[in-house]
Length: 471
Image 1 (cartoon, rainbow, N blue to C red):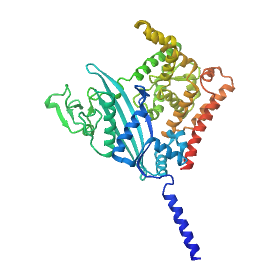
Image 2: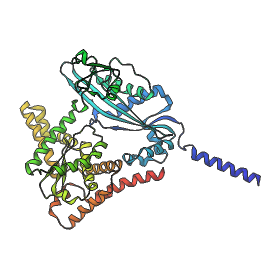
Image 3: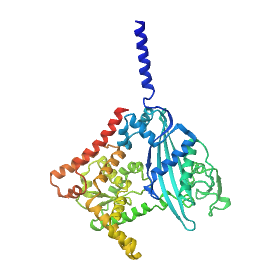
Image 4: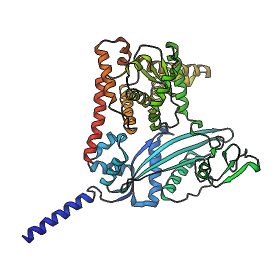
């Protein structure tokens, strides 16, 4: 009996050990990088994928200090798959911090990190030609306490792109490790940079700028952080907003967007309904705040037509037809449509379509490359018009519509809105089709069928639910 009792206690101890110690953690890591998210709107620089370039530099810098305590993106990915949690990558955008922490515990990590590329810009300068700017963020979740920390950095250089990248990565590592990174120049985004406040305007300036206020109006402040705690605001000359930096894709979005707005407003009359516009803005506010495109200025316009449709111009204008608004009953239904259209803007679908058309159009390529500037400009204008007219008339690709639907579901879930509203919206489209309502014909000709869209979203949700069941 005593022997049986000892065996039973040994079994219990072993079982508890399995519950406490992560099965798949061969080596505990202080920090595991679970993903890299590119919100910059720039996919590649000088022929190299931007995500890969930044990830390699970050891994190199963090390993200098953490050595074996840092687990890179690929190693973390492999360990997640080994732990039978690979479905995470099918539904990662739906995961909450608590669920990410649970994944971190499963793979034996003290901390879980998500690297964000928040901006890459090549800024034209009048004299020096060009400056390079890389904006990074690192979200770190403590897998013991669930606490979140967020670190930011900026690399700004007039020397070279590589120099800007190096500065951004070293600053990020220094911020995470609590070490000050010595640099010959302070970052414009560094919250510890000393500044001069203006007593009257309550703006603060860089100490070496050429437009400091009179001495009697100056207030020396130890840092930007201190200035803002004392209700000073940044001078837009010293600290230009991100949206003012030159970005070739953003310029392309503005041009394509202007073409789209012009086309839509040529064929449809705009509705003057400020109350309805205000309602759309209110519904959209939490979705826009959750968006990866933090610096897009989203505006709404209503088209006076019974057609049932919505359209997102790449410059941030979202159009609703009055016919669609008459069909949508609740704020949640409207929110799904807004989030779907915002998804097209976030994923730069119009820019992607333009670049594909440019690459495939031999005629346009010959004109742009081999003729006079005037002909080149005409060819570009023609291609802009053709691409946007094609999107307005035929819609985005099926894959792009699927991606926009998934983005919509993600935003609604993360903002605690009723993401199941998509079933009601799609159900209405199905009933309108069954009743042979002609005003919805365009949306059926430019989108996947409602049944297909429901199936895609249910598959997306199912991946998330399978992940939760494993956690």
